[in-house]
Image (cartoon, rainbow, N blue to C red; front, side, top):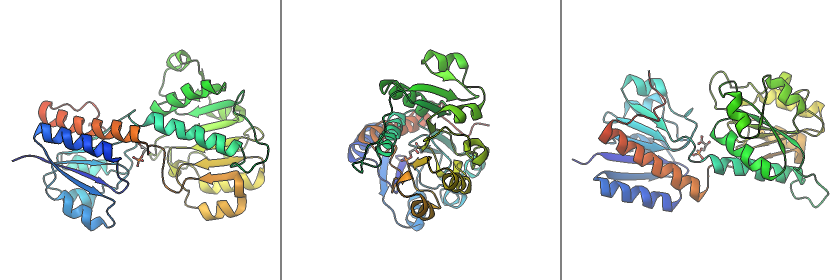
Amino acid sequence: MAKKVLVATVKPFASQAINKITEICKNGGYELEILEKYESKDELLAAVKTAEALIVRSDKITADVIAEAPQLKVIVRGGAGYDNIDLEAAGEKGIVVMNTPGQNSNAVAELAFGMMVYIARGQFNGKPGRELKGKKLGIHAYGHVGKNVARIAKGFDMEVWAYDPYVDDADIKADGVKPVQEVKKMYENCDYISLNLPSIPATQKSINYELMKDLPQNATIVNTARKEIVCEDSMIKLLTEREDLKYVSDIAPVKKDEMLEKFGDRVFFTPKKMGAQTLEANVNAGVAAINQIIGYFEKGDTTFQVNKK
Ligand code: 3PG
């Protein structure tokens, strides 16, 4: 019997991505079920019952979902961050979890610049704004997105710094970017800080008052990562004390209403997470996800497994 692949996405992939996934499944002899824009968890729980492989985006794959999926062998997060998947629960059932690193990073990096220009130009309010040219940009975490942010920043003639204790200085320098040893130093010097960290226990609320309080005049924090990494109380305290600072985020913070009310056009939040929401990123991540599933079933390929012991 053909193995069943389930694509379960509240926020659907572009139809072109789904067409390609469908074609690859058909050619490979896999059955495909698409569950898009589902409104209740029950729909997901029903669909996973017979799935052997699962492709998701930010959909929450918690222990109770995994418990309802006795056939499940592999979950692929079509994207980078896998903080939405219970790795422990998957591991206990011997389920391999993978992501598709790099496949949507250009889309996220481009959005960071869209938001930077938007906020630098006063949210297009018709009044004189500022340019990015000549400003210092500090990239906090130099992974796939960070590297793309650096590449685009050079086109804007920005001076680019980066902090990432897990990346060799030589690799950062090779991109024409200045590696920084102390993260605080980057926050003290850069006009724009691009947050590109994953959300893990060590990074959650790590962008705090102490780190941000000495930002240069008129600085902006740009968050295309996760809302959880920013300490919202710190952000509110800081923006209250420093009327020159700005915060833009791809996905609204929990305290969105309070921030919008207090800080007006110094803050901007996308209504839905938009970073990876492009046709190109959807096709890249969707196709990579289905190919990784087939590679796992047919060759035991676990290259992008994120829950290796
Ligand atoms: C990611 O982690 O890849 C991005 O945040 C994109 O998430 P999305 O697929 O839910 O848009």
